[in-house]
Length: 140
Image (cartoon, rainbow, N blue to C red; front, side, top):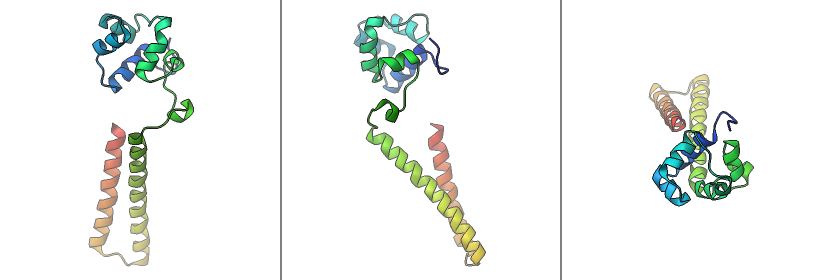
């Protein structure tokens, strides 16, 4: 069942972990053994076709996504985006804007010869700090 470079088992494991569930907790919610969940995640077996809708509900995806081995984007799937995802998106845009603004300010002030060294270092430091934070956020 390998599609898009991810198997159903890999998807089940990643979704379970993203929700902070253990294999035992998922097994309890699915009314199966933790060994069954382990086999699903290692692609040694697949969930019963009748249990796919319940598994999809527990993992907050569609049965289609489980079968395809990939989660569609929230917009493509018609799902609402959480407030945390919205805030993270806004923070990323603001950080990128600050990096670009500091770069432009440095260039313009240098060309106009109105930039004092201390101000130049401050602009550079602010731009680099925002770039570093953005880089670290994307590492997650």
